[in-house]
Length: 179
Image (cartoon, rainbow, N blue to C red; front, side, top):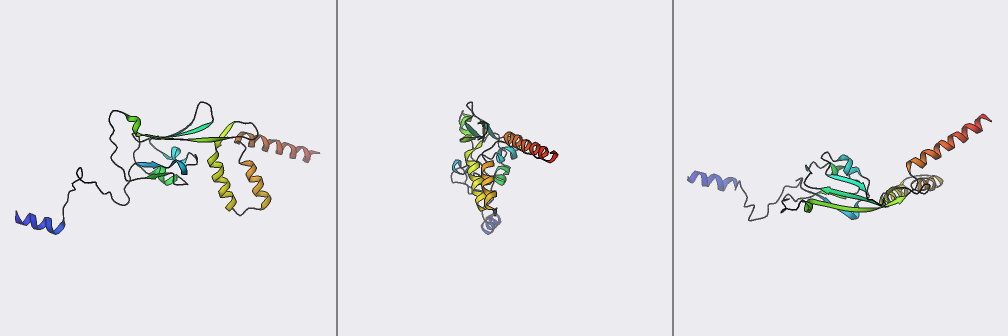
């Protein structure tokens, strides 16, 4: 028996007093993802990368806002959302105690982002924060001055209108080449 005490003293305790003292998690622990609304640009990378579909992005009924929802009850803590988020809006935290009483809605986080409308057709197309983020990145790009202004105009046009404009330019070019 004394030999066991000697071994315990030499190597330390193998258990923790967890319910009575907070458990300190290791440095690279993958806990509950934490959403920082202020950093979110609405790019939907986290929702696309999530294998368990715990992150969902959808438009509201009026098509004026993009709604971001994270259901922690579905999350498998894989960390893909943390890896793909360009702004760090979704980060894995240290929280692992996720029990709730009777109400699973306590496991759901959500945020709403304002949508930008297409300058040509007026349909909602992308979150305003995503356009602002792209403008910020474009300003640091090494583009010619005329190209930067042209790129800024294209940010406010939806993909369908961009296709229609490209087709129109191509047909005009073909007509001029034929003449």
